[in-house]
Length: 146
Image (cartoon, rainbow, N blue to C red; front, side, top):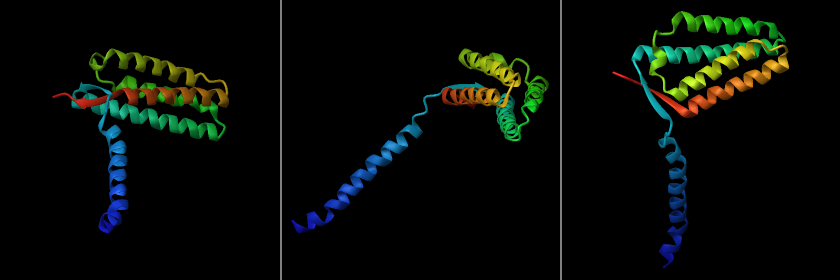
């Protein structure tokens, strides 16, 4: 009987650890985002465009910290030029309708950010823009189509 009491805390610790691990691991395994497939070059472009957007938001935050809200429109214009010059023809047809709708709303938010009249307004508009980024990443996942 004494032997059982000695290992009882160990059994409790082990059971608790297994349950905790299952609670942590399960959400990571349960990816419920909508998956859509793109050709490898299309996926590469989407990923590069996302990086360009992140870098642009980062530069805009730096402009705001340096009290240069006038630089925002030029940053957004450069991002738009990148998209116009590099976007693969017909890629939009590969996107699910919900993704297209979200992308159109995000494009509009970029324009709203570019038109910000003050640093406070630009901060509010960049916050809204980042909400679109988060919503998209929570909703969609890319895969390569052969």
